[in-house]
Length: 153
Image (tube, rainbow, N blue to C red; front, side):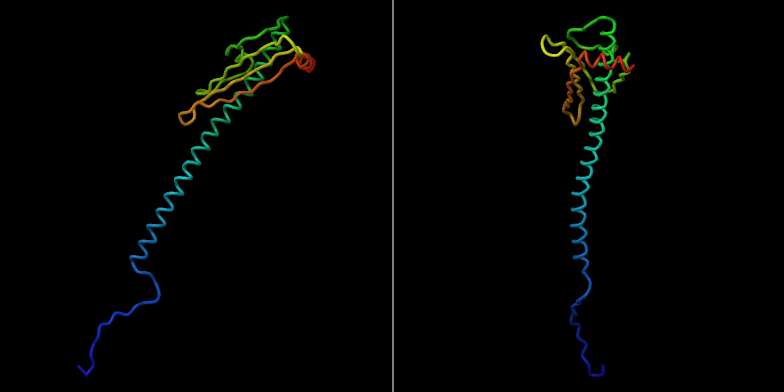
């Protein structure tokens, strides 16, 4: 053989990655992506739940306006309701439409002292992630407000 000896000494490459290094990098990247995907999935569920809350807040506002209209009608007919709970049919006759899964209760009180008018409380409840959520709004609707509203009509 021409007097040369053939030696097979391994040559260490200085560029590139070995297969083991590439697989380890992919495994780490996959683990990080799984963690990030979990965060975005939770954020999406939160956004969907906020949509339910937005509908509940809107329903509360509609119930408040329907209650004011109902009280104006009662007052115009010579009545001055003392206190109680507004029936859903009375709210519906003044433009209120409830959403399924969202419960709204409206109460009113005519106080014995202070300015003449009604304190209206609208309480809206719904289920979110297995927990009962509540949104409550209180408002004062005075006889002065009623007279102003009637004059504007």
